[in-house]
Amino acid sequence: DIVMTQTPLSSPVTVGQPASISCRSSQSPVHSDGNTYLSWLQQRPGQPPRLLIHKISNRFSGVPDRFSGSGAGTDFTLKISRVEAEDVGIYYCMQGAQLPYTFGQGTKLEIK
Amino acid sequence: QVQLVESGGGVVQPGRSLRLSCAASGFTFGSAGMHWVRQAPGKGLEWVAAIWDDGSSKYYSDSVKGRFTISRDNSKNTLCLQMNSLIVEDTAVYYCARWGPFGDIDYWGQGALVTVSS
Image (cartoon, rainbow over all chains, first blue to last red; front, top):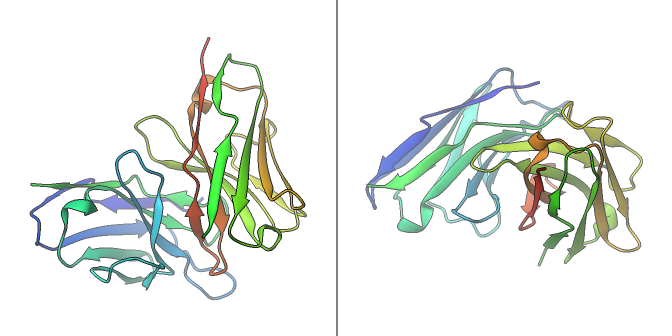
């Protein structure tokens, strides 16, 4: 199984300031079709997960452009350019290249 | 808009069975693979099972293989998860999720809570 490791596990941020979350995979999440299936999910308190970014850097429908994803190989990053209060929650990276799909432990974003 | 609504959760004793359903709408259900993902209380996400759009292939995590069965009825736009021989460690919110056209899991339901307790 591909192991996903996120850092940090907790991130206190001031509103209006940037935030960054890292995700490292034990092997590259490249599918046989050539795509890298690395996604970022947001889970607000009491809510189901919501897809933010797919295939490393593609924002999903309706996702604000303050969210961006980057990376290659086994190292990936989610960045929020200017954190807003509604961004509070837990962020997960996920690999969808091979079954079983696996998730990072989650990074809790909170407002200072 | 895509909607996924789970039902069938509840409290069940260890060793018993429970069947979850997921009603899908807002997209062509028969053209989409589907997943079940669970989340134990206060914990992270764990992928459970997946099924292809036509139901011809099914996949399971090692933790549920042999006990859980994923199925679908494309005529009723419904995904199911039959859970047998339940153990305390199966206690979780179970999410139904769509295998989107980009090849990623894109939409998630609100979840159904399953509590296994004596």
